[in-house]
Length: 193
Image (cartoon, rainbow, N blue to C red; front, side):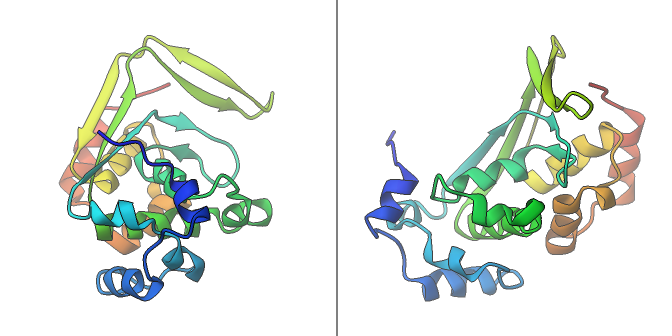
C-alpha cells in the first residue's frame, strides 16, 4: 500500500504530459470541457494505470445542482487540488461537467469499480434547514464493476429520474443507457431514505 497526496504531486509538478492524457481520454470519450484537467494527472498515479480504482462512497441526497451523490460524484475528489472552487464554477455552473471530466480521466486510466455503503448511517441535505441530517441503521450496501450502472440503479431505487440528475444524465450520454429491463427491476425494489 502507498499513500499518495495528489495535491503535493501537482504542486511539485510531478504530472503527466497533457497531450498523453488528452490522447488516451479523447480516444475513448468526447473531449473534456475543462482542458486544464489534462495537465493535472500525477505521474505516479498514471504509473498505476490498468489497475482498479475503487470509489467508496455513501449515498447522499444533496440540494443544488447535484440531487444525489454517489460513486461518480465521489471521483470529484480525485481532482488533485484542495481548491476545487474553479471546478464548481459560479453557482455550481461547472460542477457537473467537472465531475464528468474527472470521471472520463479515471475511466481512461483505471478500471473503476464502486461500493456504495449505507449500513449504519448516511447524510442527506435538509433543504429547509440548509444543513445535513443523518439517516441511521439503513442496512444497505451496493457494489458493481461499473460506477455508472451502480449510481443509476441506486438513483432509480431512490426515486430519481436520471434526466433530473445532471451528472448522471451526462454520464448516460457518455457511457450509454441501461437496458430497460434493468431499470424496471430497480423500480420494483425502491429504497427510501
